[in-house]
Image 1 (cartoon, helix red, strand yellow):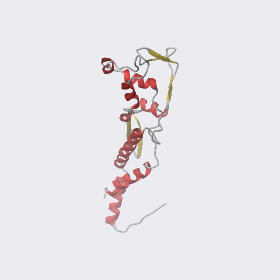
Image 2: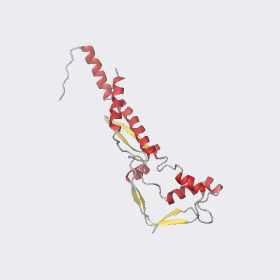
Image 3: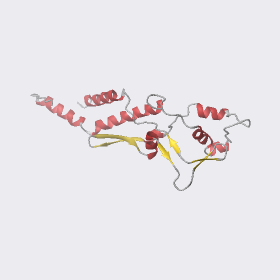
Image 4: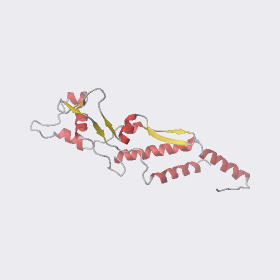
Length: 187
């Protein structure tokens, strides 16, 4: 145990004020924002180590490519009559389509007392972070639209884990640095 005795009453009041502010939820909110940025970096790098998330399945890419009114209006096709992949689908599938694009908006944090909790605001994030196996509840198979206008049937779909809320080697030092900067500004 460390005990510090200070005879200067002014210094003692200043240190007590810093200690009071440092234990306040405000510093945890600062750390929450640092964790939000760190998590965003994991999204951009598509995992930790960078690029470690499993790629999207071709059927997922095909469904995303042909989904929506815009795609139907422009008659977006996956393949040409000779069976080869169209240039448009190739650009879509291999030209920068992010694996968990849009999921970062579901990452949040909460300060409860002297604790910082980080997690997802939707179960979708938990499923992607931890992985899941989806099976039909009331039918014999799951049904998904295929790119060619038909359907794909499956007894189960396995969503691989793509960890998002990870602590990278550099993250603790950044958190300590942010807390120290905040305490130094608390004088």
